[in-house]
Length: 387
Ligand SMILES: Cc1ncc(COP(=O)(O)O)c(C=O)c1O
Image: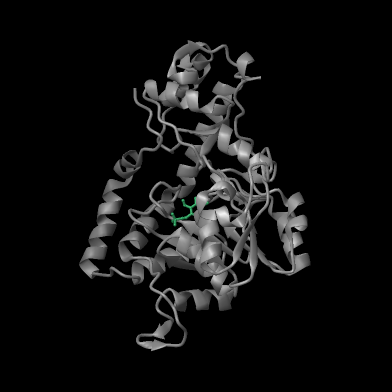
């Protein structure tokens, strides 16, 4: 039995008829760029996020960049975020002309550590981007409090957190704006590229709507310099079908996470993900921590179990951000995450027997053959050798 990291086909099969009907409607109406399917999705997604406005755009990266520039962030400004995220979070800051300033994360949730924020604030700081990593929201109350005290905007990077909650409030609804990615592998994934910004700020929403459509409210009358960042009609229609299923899919992910937790409970060389008291985690990623991560991934792959690493190099140590002059040791928790976290197979359609197989092989790995130095095979006495 193979256990893929993700199985988009299984999900498609479960909604094939609905998707084909929706796609046919787009073809019949030729509403390919923006249009009624995107508008409908925007209304429904705003309700889902308990926000007044949702603006569909081309990707999560674009959503972040547009929200930052829409709030006036640009050249000479600093924006605080975390180093253990997908590089898009930092790229959006850079593309506004601002500088990313990193703060380390909490060792239990792997999310922004609010206790470290105030020390990183300078007169140039304009905004904070907490990233709701793996489907669990950052600790928003202290983040919002610090932001309000210092007059900073908060933009939630909710690209991995569709339907996640903080004290019963949905991801995207707490900051000045929330940004979502609908990349195909996300909990709510398009059949191509797409993203959205949600906000309760009417002025920002109006600006974003115009900006994504070449700065025009009326065709060929441009009141601002904008961009083409529209969501396309096919993605609007696909996402409209999938949004209805999202609560059930998230529930299935939560159930799968619980099964993993139960199976792995007695494995002392693995740290399972922790769900914070304030959170409803939607397990976009189910990542465990272990000190022999790379050997474990190889051993599981040999058993047809496929894992991922999110992310192997924290952003402050990426070549692209070398000019910021960060060093190894600057963010010890994020660096430990990069070395020790492994993302196990996780998707709604994962079966109990697949989860059992993954967990069994993780347990068996303790005595199994692993790659030693020089690529030679040896028996590893785990976890004693790792201590
Ligand atoms: C945390 C985070 N931020 C931003 C993005 C960028 O989204 P997109 O790939 O839709 O541009 C992603 C997507 O992988 C993400 O995981």
